[in-house]
Image (cartoon, rainbow over all chains, first blue to last red; front, side, top):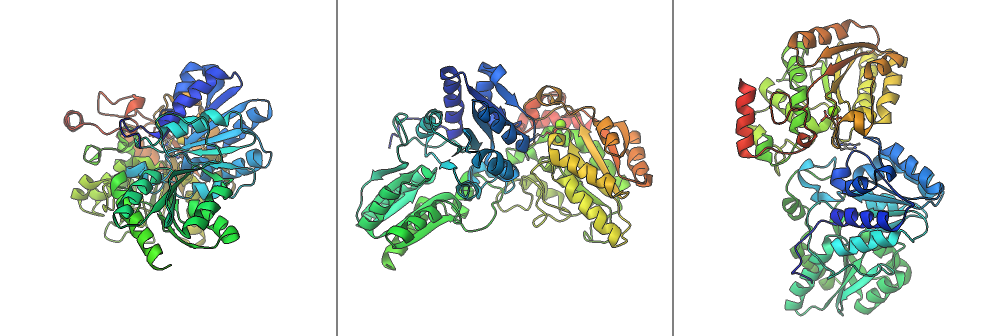
Length: 315
Length: 250
Ligand SMILES: Cc1ncc(C[n+]2csc(CCOP(=O)(O)OP(=O)(O)O)c2C)c(N)n1
Ligand SMILES: [Mg+2]
């Protein structure tokens, strides 16, 4: 882990990479819905005011407009909080972006519980599931600042629509510098033979810590950062599952519809093994500090290691 | 309260404070000891981020202890960042995702009409919130179904998160829009108590849906917050809070 780098929020990487894309490509446009300061799209807006459209508190209209730009030769980056991007504007994303297979990047900040004090209305714990359900939609959940930066830069050249989820709080760095590409989206960060830990977003750091913890108990855990949840890297996931024979998934999202389901789908079809899912157990969030919430909803290193132990012993 | 919480929305809470005070302590018939009293008037905070002003009014009406306000947004406190009907006594409906309160209000108004209940519904919205298309779908429905028991109040403070409403996405003229949608409209100074209580009382007498466009100042009463977009969703420091409270008590 590249611990010397000071933690930074993934949404900040979005802002910086979007600005860079604006410099590189004239046909990049960005839209926001009265959250440009929070999503960090405002940096692009300052540099390229003629290509930036703050539509006000009107997410559905924003997605429709993003589709209009995309069908006319632009690559559109539409940002707001994850709850509103996927919830309020779901039908616009479905009908006007996903089905037409347009190059719109739905860039959703403030994913998950770590939104914190705003509470359940603003904590998106279903967005990955909603987006994964849509045909043509590529679903990306980067794990740190540098991976987010890479994902956004790379998104320019990728065909079709894409969902990119970022977070509000500062998070530790995993990658020393932005990788060239996310590749197929499943990155084995640590090899192991007893159990696979698949994680995305903020849970990747915790998976690495849990692996350390398990090592003390003579358990060899493999850690895989799954940054592209759809299409999931079937080969890498299946290979890890067949090697270890059991797994735990960890995500800042409902246990329904997200990474847990994505990995289970691979397992069910390729190599059925025992899988434990760490995630939000089909409930809404609440107000509290991010750390208190992660503790309360069991999204911690200790719970991850504990669940891995349970899965191993019940195998 | 917001300082204690370390986050929250002072600007829009202060611009609505006079209106919410008039509602809870003059206009509305409600029973803090019996929040579900069927004959009550109902208050819907469509702009849920202004929970602090609602919680203050509820606490001082007696729905829960005033001391609870210091635990706003804290883990395990019933006072969530945005109103939660399952957690807080007196909250009619959960809110926080903008643009939905008027639709819910139209449904409630029609249901109360079916049940022959006497209450009036008072729904408070923001001007930035009024950029949501759903607001106008609801406005159309309210007029179509002639919901005489519905009053919509727009806290027209001219600001939203990213700046002045007229610069981000102009929603004016609000009064003309409501009129065009078939509502009866009154524009008032949202900090003139006489005008506020008169308009609220008047709205009960209107046959169809009534809309009150209240011209307000975001951050009202605190010199350094007034008309500043930056104070939309930021907690004052302890020192700032002290200054703010001193100014407000004047
Ligand atoms: C659907 C939705 N989109 C975005 C937000 C984030 N948000 C919270 S407050 C706000 C601005 C609201 O402005 P306004 O309605 O004028 O409120 P006020 O000025 O009274 O605080 C925004 C965009 C939200 N809560 N809900
Ligand atoms: Mg406003």
